[in-house]
Length: 301
Image 1 (cartoon, rainbow, N blue to C red):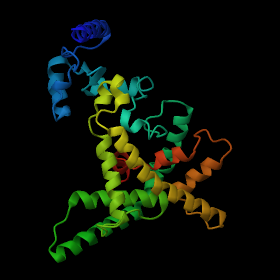
Image 2 (cartoon, rainbow, N blue to C red):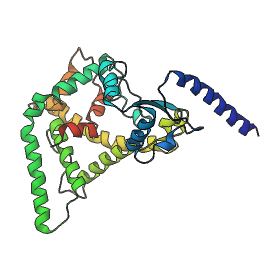
Image 3 (cartoon, helix red, strand yellow):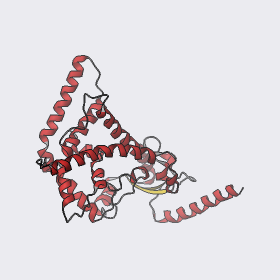
Protein backbone atom coordinates (compact mmCIF):
# COMPACT_ATOMS: atom_id res chain seq x y z
CA UNK A 1 0.00 0.00 0.00
CA UNK A 2 2.80 2.42 0.89
CA UNK A 3 4.57 1.60 -2.36
CA UNK A 4 1.39 2.21 -4.33
CA UNK A 5 0.77 5.52 -2.55
CA UNK A 6 4.38 6.56 -3.17
CA UNK A 7 4.13 5.80 -6.89
CA UNK A 8 0.85 7.71 -7.15
CA UNK A 9 2.38 10.65 -5.28
CA UNK A 10 5.43 10.70 -7.53
CA UNK A 11 3.23 10.58 -10.62
CA UNK A 12 0.99 13.42 -9.42
CA UNK A 13 4.00 15.54 -8.45
CA UNK A 14 5.67 14.87 -11.82
CA UNK A 15 2.41 15.64 -13.63
CA UNK A 16 2.17 18.97 -11.78
CA UNK A 17 5.79 19.90 -12.49
CA UNK A 18 5.59 18.96 -16.17
CA UNK A 19 2.27 20.75 -16.45
CA UNK A 20 3.88 23.97 -15.26
CA UNK A 21 6.84 23.49 -17.53
CA UNK A 22 4.62 22.92 -20.55
CA UNK A 23 3.13 26.39 -20.19
CA UNK A 24 6.17 27.83 -21.94
CA UNK A 25 6.58 24.96 -24.42
CA UNK A 26 5.18 24.43 -27.91
CA UNK A 27 2.07 22.24 -28.26
CA UNK A 28 2.38 18.49 -28.34
CA UNK A 29 0.70 15.19 -27.48
CA UNK A 30 -0.47 14.72 -23.91
CA UNK A 31 2.04 12.42 -22.17
CA UNK A 32 1.11 9.19 -20.44
CA UNK A 33 2.27 8.42 -16.89
CA UNK A 34 5.95 7.42 -16.61
CA UNK A 35 6.61 6.78 -20.32
CA UNK A 36 5.39 10.15 -21.58
CA UNK A 37 5.09 9.97 -25.38
CA UNK A 38 7.59 7.17 -25.98
CA UNK A 39 4.81 4.89 -27.20
CA UNK A 40 4.16 7.25 -30.12
CA UNK A 41 7.63 6.91 -31.66
CA UNK A 42 7.45 3.29 -32.85
CA UNK A 43 10.27 1.63 -34.78
CA UNK A 44 10.47 4.48 -37.33
CA UNK A 45 10.67 7.65 -35.22
CA UNK A 46 11.23 9.96 -38.20
CA UNK A 47 7.92 8.90 -39.76
CA UNK A 48 6.10 9.05 -36.41
CA UNK A 49 7.38 12.57 -35.75
CA UNK A 50 6.31 13.66 -39.24
CA UNK A 51 2.79 12.41 -38.56
CA UNK A 52 2.68 14.13 -35.17
CA UNK A 53 3.87 17.40 -36.75
CA UNK A 54 0.82 17.38 -39.02
CA UNK A 55 -1.34 17.43 -35.88
CA UNK A 56 0.65 19.63 -33.50
CA UNK A 57 2.56 21.88 -35.88
CA UNK A 58 6.16 22.24 -37.12
CA UNK A 59 7.41 23.06 -33.60
CA UNK A 60 6.14 20.66 -30.95
CA UNK A 61 7.17 19.33 -27.55
CA UNK A 62 7.16 15.73 -26.37
CA UNK A 63 7.99 14.16 -23.05
CA UNK A 64 10.10 11.08 -23.71
CA UNK A 65 10.20 9.29 -20.40
CA UNK A 66 11.46 11.91 -17.96
CA UNK A 67 13.06 14.06 -20.68
CA UNK A 68 11.26 16.96 -22.36
CA UNK A 69 12.12 17.28 -26.05
CA UNK A 70 11.28 19.98 -28.60
CA UNK A 71 11.07 18.86 -32.23
CA UNK A 72 11.44 21.23 -35.20
CA UNK A 73 10.17 19.71 -38.45
CA UNK A 74 9.92 22.54 -40.96
CA UNK A 75 12.59 24.51 -42.86
CA UNK A 76 11.55 27.74 -41.15
CA UNK A 77 11.76 26.24 -37.66
CA UNK A 78 15.08 24.56 -38.42
CA UNK A 79 16.48 27.82 -39.80
CA UNK A 80 15.42 29.65 -36.64
CA UNK A 81 17.25 27.12 -34.45
CA UNK A 82 20.31 26.29 -36.56
CA UNK A 83 21.06 29.73 -38.00
CA UNK A 84 19.56 32.56 -36.00
CA UNK A 85 19.98 31.01 -32.54
CA UNK A 86 22.72 28.49 -33.23
CA UNK A 87 24.89 29.59 -30.28
CA UNK A 88 22.04 28.98 -27.84
CA UNK A 89 21.32 25.49 -29.19
CA UNK A 90 24.89 24.44 -30.00
CA UNK A 91 25.39 22.32 -26.87
CA UNK A 92 23.90 18.85 -26.97
CA UNK A 93 23.04 16.30 -24.33
CA UNK A 94 25.56 13.48 -23.95
CA UNK A 95 24.13 9.94 -24.24
CA UNK A 96 24.74 7.98 -21.08
CA UNK A 97 26.51 4.91 -22.46
CA UNK A 98 29.18 6.52 -24.69
CA UNK A 99 29.43 9.67 -22.57
CA UNK A 100 31.79 8.20 -20.01
CA UNK A 101 34.13 6.83 -22.69
CA UNK A 102 34.10 9.65 -25.26
CA UNK A 103 33.71 12.69 -23.03
CA UNK A 104 36.65 14.43 -24.72
CA UNK A 105 35.18 14.05 -28.20
CA UNK A 106 34.51 17.25 -30.12
CA UNK A 107 31.01 15.86 -30.75
CA UNK A 108 29.87 16.25 -27.13
CA UNK A 109 32.08 18.92 -25.61
CA UNK A 110 30.21 22.12 -24.64
CA UNK A 111 30.63 25.25 -26.73
CA UNK A 112 33.74 26.63 -25.05
CA UNK A 113 37.32 27.62 -26.03
CA UNK A 114 38.52 24.00 -25.96
CA UNK A 115 35.69 22.84 -28.21
CA UNK A 116 36.38 25.70 -30.63
CA UNK A 117 40.08 24.79 -30.72
CA UNK A 118 39.29 21.16 -31.53
CA UNK A 119 36.74 22.23 -34.12
CA UNK A 120 39.33 24.47 -35.74
CA UNK A 121 41.80 21.59 -36.00
CA UNK A 122 39.19 19.22 -37.43
CA UNK A 123 37.83 21.84 -39.82
CA UNK A 124 41.19 23.03 -41.09
CA UNK A 125 43.00 19.71 -41.43
CA UNK A 126 40.45 16.94 -41.88
CA UNK A 127 37.25 18.32 -43.43
CA UNK A 128 38.50 21.46 -45.17
CA UNK A 129 37.98 21.62 -48.97
CA UNK A 130 41.72 21.93 -49.69
CA UNK A 131 42.40 18.85 -47.57
CA UNK A 132 39.70 16.85 -49.31
CA UNK A 133 41.03 17.94 -52.70
CA UNK A 134 44.55 16.84 -51.71
CA UNK A 135 43.18 13.40 -50.81
CA UNK A 136 41.38 12.92 -54.12
CA UNK A 137 44.01 10.43 -55.27
CA UNK A 138 43.46 8.42 -52.10
CA UNK A 139 39.72 8.21 -52.71
CA UNK A 140 40.34 7.05 -56.27
CA UNK A 141 42.78 4.42 -55.00
CA UNK A 142 40.28 3.06 -52.47
CA UNK A 143 37.46 2.97 -55.02
CA UNK A 144 39.74 1.11 -57.44
CA UNK A 145 40.57 -1.41 -54.71
CA UNK A 146 36.85 -1.86 -54.13
CA UNK A 147 36.18 -2.38 -57.85
CA UNK A 148 39.04 -4.89 -58.09
CA UNK A 149 37.76 -6.80 -55.06
CA UNK A 150 34.22 -6.99 -56.46
CA UNK A 151 35.68 -8.12 -59.81
CA UNK A 152 37.59 -10.97 -58.15
CA UNK A 153 34.46 -12.14 -56.35
CA UNK A 154 32.47 -11.95 -59.58
CA UNK A 155 35.01 -14.09 -61.43
CA UNK A 156 34.78 -16.69 -58.65
CA UNK A 157 30.99 -16.59 -58.74
CA UNK A 158 30.83 -15.41 -55.11
CA UNK A 159 28.23 -13.03 -53.67
CA UNK A 160 29.25 -9.50 -52.65
CA UNK A 161 28.32 -8.25 -49.19
CA UNK A 162 27.72 -4.66 -50.31
CA UNK A 163 27.38 -3.24 -46.80
CA UNK A 164 30.61 -4.84 -45.61
CA UNK A 165 32.82 -3.82 -48.55
CA UNK A 166 31.47 -0.24 -48.55
CA UNK A 167 32.05 0.01 -44.80
CA UNK A 168 35.62 -1.33 -45.04
CA UNK A 169 36.42 1.01 -47.92
CA UNK A 170 35.27 4.02 -45.89
CA UNK A 171 37.10 2.77 -42.81
CA UNK A 172 40.36 2.33 -44.70
CA UNK A 173 40.00 5.76 -46.26
CA UNK A 174 39.79 7.21 -42.76
CA UNK A 175 42.72 5.20 -41.43
CA UNK A 176 44.90 6.20 -44.38
CA UNK A 177 43.98 9.83 -43.75
CA UNK A 178 44.80 9.60 -40.05
CA UNK A 179 47.60 7.00 -39.86
CA UNK A 180 48.86 6.65 -43.47
CA UNK A 181 48.00 2.95 -43.65
CA UNK A 182 44.97 0.66 -43.67
CA UNK A 183 43.62 -0.72 -40.41
CA UNK A 184 41.60 -3.45 -42.10
CA UNK A 185 41.39 -5.32 -45.39
CA UNK A 186 38.73 -6.26 -47.92
CA UNK A 187 40.25 -9.74 -48.23
CA UNK A 188 40.72 -10.50 -44.53
CA UNK A 189 37.73 -12.38 -43.10
CA UNK A 190 39.33 -14.08 -40.10
CA UNK A 191 42.34 -12.20 -38.70
CA UNK A 192 42.91 -9.09 -36.59
CA UNK A 193 41.55 -6.98 -39.43
CA UNK A 194 38.18 -8.72 -39.13
CA UNK A 195 38.22 -8.26 -35.36
CA UNK A 196 38.73 -4.50 -35.68
CA UNK A 197 35.88 -4.28 -38.20
CA UNK A 198 33.59 -6.02 -35.72
CA UNK A 199 34.62 -3.72 -32.86
CA UNK A 200 33.88 -0.59 -34.91
CA UNK A 201 30.55 -2.02 -36.09
CA UNK A 202 29.55 -3.03 -32.56
CA UNK A 203 30.36 0.45 -31.21
CA UNK A 204 28.25 2.12 -33.88
CA UNK A 205 25.34 -0.22 -33.21
CA UNK A 206 25.59 0.22 -29.42
CA UNK A 207 25.75 4.03 -29.61
CA UNK A 208 22.71 4.09 -31.91
CA UNK A 209 20.58 1.71 -29.81
CA UNK A 210 17.81 3.05 -27.54
CA UNK A 211 18.91 3.24 -23.92
CA UNK A 212 16.47 3.55 -21.04
CA UNK A 213 19.11 5.58 -19.14
CA UNK A 214 18.76 8.40 -21.68
CA UNK A 215 15.01 8.65 -21.10
CA UNK A 216 15.14 8.14 -17.32
CA UNK A 217 18.41 9.75 -16.08
CA UNK A 218 17.81 8.82 -12.40
CA UNK A 219 18.13 5.16 -13.47
CA UNK A 220 21.40 5.66 -15.37
CA UNK A 221 23.63 4.48 -12.53
CA UNK A 222 21.92 1.06 -12.61
CA UNK A 223 22.82 0.57 -16.31
CA UNK A 224 19.74 -1.61 -16.71
CA UNK A 225 20.49 -2.64 -20.30
CA UNK A 226 24.24 -3.01 -19.75
CA UNK A 227 25.22 -0.57 -22.51
CA UNK A 228 27.83 1.16 -20.32
CA UNK A 229 29.57 -2.14 -19.57
CA UNK A 230 29.42 -3.30 -23.18
CA UNK A 231 30.77 -0.04 -24.58
CA UNK A 232 33.54 0.04 -21.95
CA UNK A 233 34.88 -3.26 -23.34
CA UNK A 234 34.49 -2.18 -26.95
CA UNK A 235 36.18 1.20 -26.46
CA UNK A 236 39.02 -0.50 -24.58
CA UNK A 237 39.62 -2.77 -27.59
CA UNK A 238 39.54 0.17 -30.00
CA UNK A 239 41.76 2.33 -27.83
CA UNK A 240 44.43 -0.37 -27.76
CA UNK A 241 44.69 -0.07 -31.54
CA UNK A 242 44.92 3.73 -31.34
CA UNK A 243 47.51 3.55 -28.56
CA UNK A 244 49.68 1.31 -30.74
CA UNK A 245 49.48 3.87 -33.55
CA UNK A 246 50.34 6.78 -31.27
CA UNK A 247 53.17 5.00 -29.46
CA UNK A 248 54.61 3.74 -32.73
CA UNK A 249 54.62 7.24 -34.21
CA UNK A 250 56.25 8.70 -31.10
CA UNK A 251 59.02 6.09 -31.31
CA UNK A 252 59.52 6.93 -34.99
CA UNK A 253 59.89 10.59 -34.12
CA UNK A 254 62.47 9.81 -31.46
CA UNK A 255 64.38 7.72 -34.01
CA UNK A 256 64.42 10.63 -36.46
CA UNK A 257 62.09 9.07 -39.03
CA UNK A 258 60.64 11.78 -41.35
CA UNK A 259 57.08 12.84 -40.61
CA UNK A 260 54.24 11.54 -42.75
CA UNK A 261 52.25 14.77 -42.30
CA UNK A 262 49.02 12.90 -41.79
CA UNK A 263 46.35 13.71 -39.21
CA UNK A 264 48.23 11.92 -36.43
CA UNK A 265 51.38 13.97 -37.06
CA UNK A 266 49.31 17.14 -37.06
CA UNK A 267 47.74 16.29 -33.69
CA UNK A 268 51.07 15.33 -32.14
CA UNK A 269 52.53 18.66 -33.28
CA UNK A 270 49.58 20.48 -31.75
CA UNK A 271 49.97 18.50 -28.51
CA UNK A 272 53.59 19.68 -28.24
CA UNK A 273 52.60 23.31 -28.75
CA UNK A 274 52.94 25.36 -25.57
CA UNK A 275 49.78 27.30 -26.48
CA UNK A 276 47.69 24.13 -26.63
CA UNK A 277 44.15 25.39 -26.05
CA UNK A 278 42.73 22.07 -27.20
CA UNK A 279 44.62 20.17 -24.44
CA UNK A 280 45.43 17.22 -26.65
CA UNK A 281 46.15 14.54 -24.06
CA UNK A 282 45.95 10.82 -24.79
CA UNK A 283 42.23 10.57 -24.00
CA UNK A 284 41.45 13.43 -26.38
CA UNK A 285 43.51 11.86 -29.17
CA UNK A 286 41.62 8.60 -28.72
CA UNK A 287 38.30 10.41 -28.89
CA UNK A 288 39.28 12.25 -32.06
CA UNK A 289 40.27 8.97 -33.69
CA UNK A 290 37.08 7.18 -32.71
CA UNK A 291 35.50 6.26 -36.01
CA UNK A 292 31.82 7.11 -36.37
CA UNK A 293 29.31 7.58 -39.15
CA UNK A 294 29.65 11.34 -39.25
CA UNK A 295 33.34 11.01 -40.19
CA UNK A 296 32.53 8.39 -42.79
CA UNK A 297 29.87 10.66 -44.28
CA UNK A 298 32.42 13.42 -44.88
CA UNK A 299 35.16 11.17 -46.24
CA UNK A 300 33.22 8.46 -48.05
CA UNK A 301 34.28 7.75 -51.67
